[in-house]
Length: 241
Length: 131
Image (cartoon, rainbow over all chains, first blue to last red; front, side, top):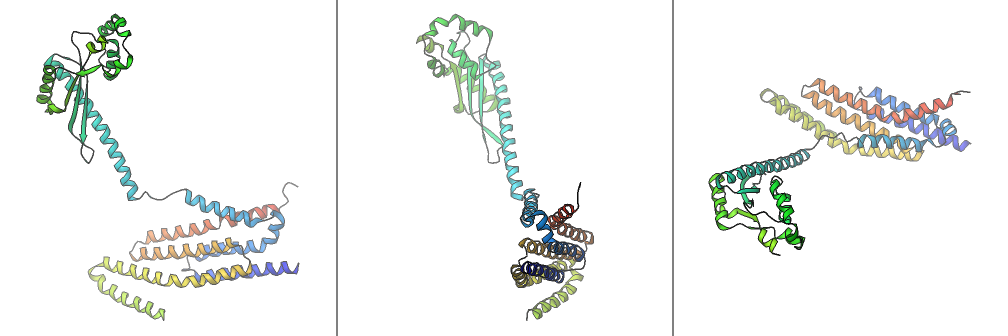
């Protein structure tokens, strides 16, 4: 009993000394009232320790947990300002995204324009035009690196695998008469293996057609003819097998 | 004799500030701010001994360490807020300085919240509720 009393008194004295110390250490008078409030609360808590212990058991663990909660809540709120590096990274990501969408849009527009241009000037039916652009360091599309033109054969109907692959690559190239032709050609193409149709449906077009397409593209869009690849469906190869 | 060094530094920088202020008030302010920073950093190492004494006291008397932590945080907040607000006040921005002090006071009071809650719970437990 006496021992417990001694410990209690020692604690009170130590806390009062501590409060006196921080009163001395304080830089100015303005803070003094606030600090005195907190110091007074600590002294009060020390004096109340026996009562609290009787009523609530071990309160210091609770106090510890609460303080930890406060500190963690402060830090987990993450109120820091974004650093310059964060902002720059965000900007870089946004720029890349924007450049990607811009070049995709540009490729699409150029492909549409090329398709109409080829159709008007050569009379060939174009299934799809695939344009690839190279970007400079800042992500802006600068030049055409490759053009793939897929033609629809004018008089000869492609076999069904060819049309399937055709519809897959060029969605706007699915005229109704080709579908009818597919129905006609069911029997010869049924013995053809399906992967033949996938892999060998396209072949490079003949030199005259390719040359015509390349000249149109060179005049209209100043595309290097070496970068232009003209493909047409290969119905003969598919139906021969 | 660190006090002589500090006072000498303060006097020299005061004279320099008075000389420079007429021509370049900006440099006068910078000089004052850096002198203050230097003295602060010079003395902040000495506080360590005081804190060591406080820790010994707390250890020997068996105060919960949370009290000492709270008290040290209060002292730190008070010093940093005071220092910052004085620099800002030197630059003539009285309103920003008072806001810094206000933030320091609020943060000190926030540190008291766990203690207050324990006391309030105890007092509520003392009262014969509902009987």
